[in-house]
Amino acid sequence: MRPSSDVLLVVDVQYDFMPGGALAVPYGDEVIAPINRLAAHFSHVVLTQDWHPANHASFAVNHPGGQPFSRAHMPYGEQVLWPAHCVQGTQGAQLHEALDIAHARLVIRKGHHANVDSYSAFVEADRTTPTGLTGYLRETGVKRVYCCGLATDYCVAWTALDARACGFEAFVIEDASRPIDLDGSLEAAWLQLTDLGVERLLVDEVLGHA
Ligand code: VGL
Ligand code: ZN
Image 1 (cartoon, protein in one colour):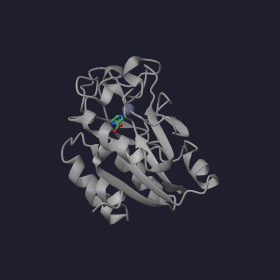
Image 2 (tube, rainbow, N blue to C red):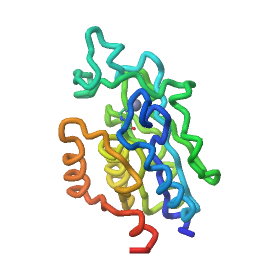
Image 3 (cartoon, rainbow, N blue to C red):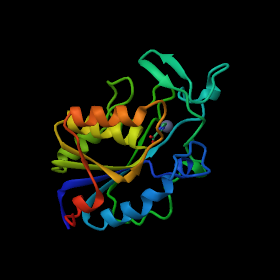
């Protein structure tokens, strides 16, 4: 069992990101088995949950003429306009029931401010509003943050980059994550992750079987 200073951060494994969901990530359901396998070895697991109000500014439907997967200018910068997803209290926003992680200690909800998105589990897209996760991880003695889930090139990447920026050792577990890959976003994410000191690992490497 990994010590409590190693946290497994499971990002957005929710029905709306599954095949057939409102913002389907291709093969998104394939992350569940490797995540369950990993979680059995981590005493410290934290889950994130994308959790938007229905009037959220990242939803194309809330912009006159806005098309899903187009871009809009927000006060904090460019924002991809997504199909409405993970609306607070809906079935699509629920964590997948096949996650077998009863010992998870914390579920952190993000994206709950109507006017700001939050891909990162640490800091919202305005890059100033904290979620509180940094303080929680510091107070519980975490040193290493192992990120996995959905989507590799959005919420997983932004979360891992912020973990590193907060001074933790940070890792992305590639085969326990799946990408959206919009306009080259996956390649751009890996370049940035590598550049900023986030390590790329496979499940077997994390578990010491490689
Ligand atoms: C995500 C787009 C919008 C993600 C969340 O979990 O990667 N992507 N909201
Ligand atoms: Zn979202």
